[in-house]
Image 1 (cartoon, rainbow, N blue to C red):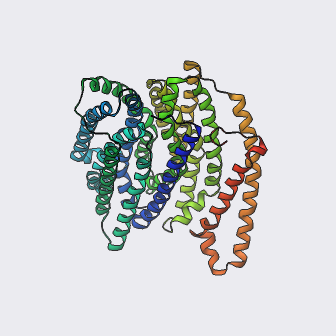
Image 2: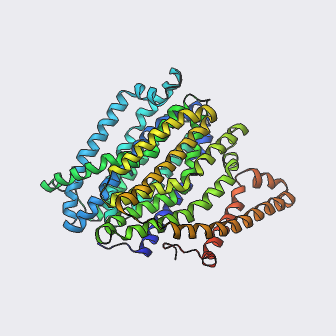
Image 3: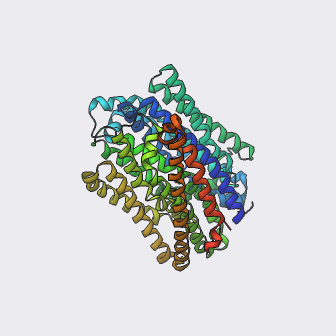
Length: 518
């Protein structure tokens, strides 16, 4: 099996990022249509609440903890004993994990009213009753995605990333088609829930086909598979806390937001989805590629992990800081231009929530990478313990900050807790594993990058306001669409891309070196 080198990592990351970008664009279209279909009222919040639980479990039993615990074991197994032994482990993992997921789905569907009362304790019984039928329909969503995640582990163990990266596009396409049909025929939201389950089933079938084409199978369970599954389980339970941290905290935020004015849950959800665009496109894609790579590097050259940590941090910084600055600059425009159903007050509140999330984009991205280094050292309990501590801090901050800043306070507590998590994980990497932090090289990079960003940012702002002046003067009736509507992004997007291209092309003039770019 081939080892990924720098060019391979960047190529794979670009491939996954490109597909993820398409998926995120579809995701934006999906959210815009969702707003048009449901608005920001009670039915929107009922659907968001019902969908949030299987989505949170997705980080545990799907592309989150399960993949992180499973992939290193499969990488080692495929390399040392071949696909037949890996297929035996896959069979056992399916019986174990999917049995647990099926049981969890059945219990949730049976006790849906009790589950809903825990998710949104601040709601009235009438509002909770809107969520119960939707939750019962949507729970099988996690079964299909969890099954796909197990197959993804096998695919990524042989450096196949296309199908897992393309699947969200399929999922979002069917989701969008379902919303459009619901709008056109005035169908109830329950119909949309069935479309979502169908989409999850189709993505599962795609993973099965790719799995079989790569000559994996569902082989009889061997004796060795039992010892290997215990190794996976010992990693899975600590990883469950680490990888699912963000989703679990969002689930808790939803519970607190149920005590806030109507619309708070929807605005938190939409703001988090917008923040998730750059997070998913760059950090999640990069983390997906680096997990199996770190596992191999830790085997043959563990000291190289210090170098990769430095260069990964620089690359994440290079990507996320401009993205954060742009989203902060256009926060109010994002909510105003993507839907006319937001009132000015709702758009302003949504913008403030988005800013509270986006200022933490760099640390959220690092939180995708850092646990992988620990997993490469076969240590899972440290990230789990740190995540648990950060979660406790997050809940405490939720109680304090929501009192002063309401929904914005919930977003701020999320960002502060994630920042604390990164600081502790970085410190323990040095203290426990003697990983060099290379603070001087990073400070040198950050200083020069700040100068470059200041120049590029000033040019962007000038181009932006010059364009506004030209459009206001010459566009006539079209100006309202280009300045206040979706048309804004038709000319802001190219300016942003040209600015990013300038940053990329002139980096050497500022003495900026990034391993994954050079």
